Length: 386
Ligand SMILES: NC(=O)C1=CN([C@@H]2O[C@H](COP(=O)(O)OP(=O)(O)OC[C@H]3O[C@@H](n4cnc5c(N)ncnc54)[C@H](O)[C@@H]3O)[C@@H](O)[C@H]2O)C=CC1
Ligand SMILES: O=C(O)C(=O)CO
Image (cartoon, rainbow, N blue to C red; front, side, top):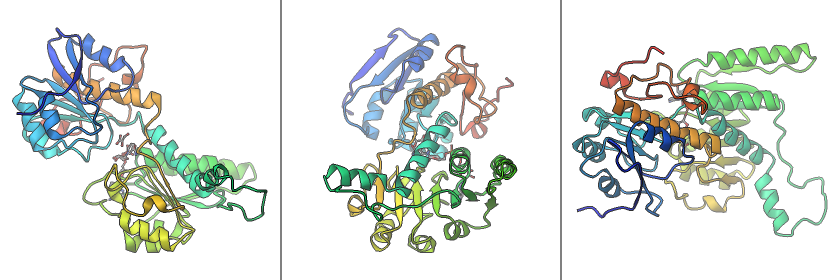
């Protein structure tokens, strides 16, 4: 028998029971659920990562839908428990859903929602921040100041890299990768090389137009190239940022062999998922290449770091905060709640998960649709005509 978990309840007499495994930012998401006759139960348990047993206890005997977190293991056991409790809706409060076994959800007929778009710029901004911090050694220099080691300006003190005119490499030029590329190109006049399974046509057009603008202003134009292999990006780029999804094809995409192909003074940024990088190989590479730098938001065994990483001065590490802006986190909560209540109400799925703005407009009611259901096709769910 699973232990009971502490909860906070909104609208106790609501017809549909929706559980959120964590308190989430803002109140719009709660209000939207309450307006749709949901009883909302929010888990207030103090531990950061809930176990499968904790979530089974939360689901209980009757549950119409769950909003969950990327730290949770949503597989066969949880989807079976949700289905047994009458639930047909789940949403991650995240765009990435590598913690979800979508096949298992399909088996139990549970819709799986995610939260694309609302976090694109926020996540890209953190990748850009890490790129700048690594190239100009900001964290190292900050530590030096605080340690009282600064005793005057020196020509060699914390010399880093100038980004202007260098090449930024993007692996996974989807929503976030493309937004990051634009920031680095427009902000720092870097050239682009990217690798993706698909052509990033809009990004290419942007770089072409910006290059023409610079040329017309008498400046050196920026350029772009779609690489035919990932290795080409690794060999050519000065700053490389990883933005693919995590799946079997991207697990340990960056390994010992690939690290050795990168420039000795390159910068590697990871704001995708930890296992995209072989972190042990990375620690070894950092040890042997002091001018190589990394900025990491995500880790292979989150929340832990591989031994040695925390000691490396050429690594900047932050705790998975890439989407952590107030507007974005409130928007993620809203999209996740609307995915769940939309499925409960039998609404169709939104036709374009890259255009979720109408759901985020606080001055209007959201459209009667689920913003983003990743297994809509597999479940044969209807698509909104709006
Ligand atoms: N650190 C954080 O807080 C955050 C991390 N993320 C991560 O970023 C990922 C990407 O998010 P979006 O840009 O919105 O997704 P997206 O689906 O728009 O972009 C992913 C891109 O990766 C490409 N891709 C897939 N397999 C590949 C491979 N083997 N090699 C090269 N490219 C490949 C896809 O073609 C696609 O263009 C999410 O899945 C999530 O894991 C997202 C938001 C915040
Ligand atoms: O949305 C995601 O995938 C995250 O990692 C958290 O923002």
